[in-house]
Length: 172
Image 1 (cartoon, rainbow, N blue to C red):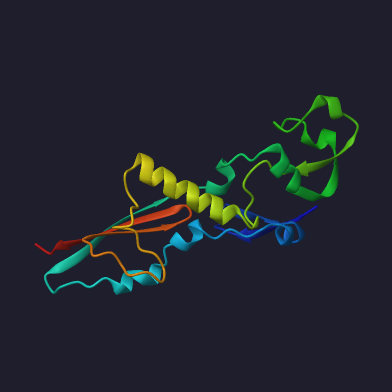
Image 2 (spheres, rainbow, N blue to C red):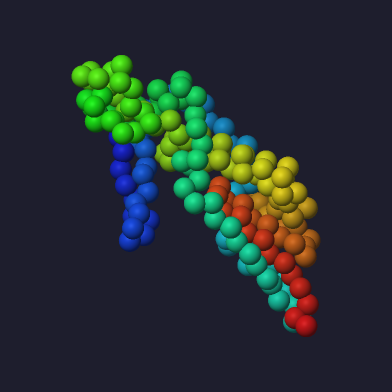
């Protein structure tokens, strides 16, 4: 069973962070897609001539992690560390009338922030969608930490749910 805590996001919302420390220790670590995480400091590596400027556009996919649905097996791994009455879930999709009057564990049926594979899965998924559907984020334009920067004029950064495009253009 795992803990939960919140992190301030803005005046209206907190981020729900799952704390599966023991579960994470039992997992093998994968770091293939996370090697493609864009770092903001890399923008400073872009060289501009005196007659050039840099245009940029940015997208943020809100509540990105919670748009993923995981398998039942993965959801069982995401059991919250307290026991609930099944009736506490009345009105939610998770409610099962067959469990009425019983004690249950709540499990996150989503890609939980805090899961050791969450960033890897999210980064790989977003990168795949951007490449296949939007025809962007290819090696010729994607800036990756500890790799040479692309030649330009288009540069892209991808950090999980944030996609940034930078275009070097003539000032005129």
